[in-house]
Image (cartoon, rainbow, N blue to C red; front, top):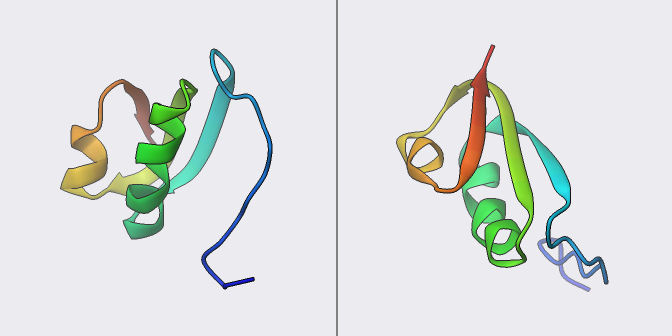
Length: 62
């Protein structure tokens, strides 16, 4: 198993998924969550321009 792999058999379509942080790790994770149909909410102090551009997500900068 590689360090970057996380294989989980979750059905995320229509489910609320919260991502904490808006950096490069979130940037890598968001496309798969969006493709899985998750209702993605990102909570972060700041976000990269790429994270801010992802649609459809809810971004809460706090």
